Length: 89
Image 1 (cartoon, rainbow, N blue to C red):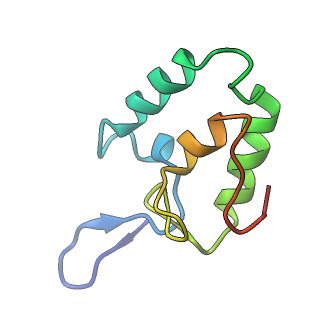
Image 2: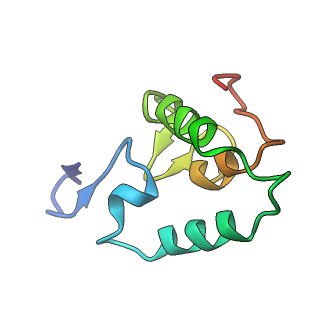
């Protein structure tokens, strides 16, 4: 994380929502969403983590959001039938 110029407010350029839990409650929505997905629609845990690792290395990730498509990457990665708009997964 880095401070936004002149504000002293820390902004995370390439963080997932789960890494910013102290700053927001959005991650709890991700947890509930993933738990509510039917098994056939939910990406397996290992696939989910691989997808998030790819997102963490992507320049389009900012504050848990994909700046390419506007989604919360943890929600997109949770669904088995979704894909990365930049074809990283």
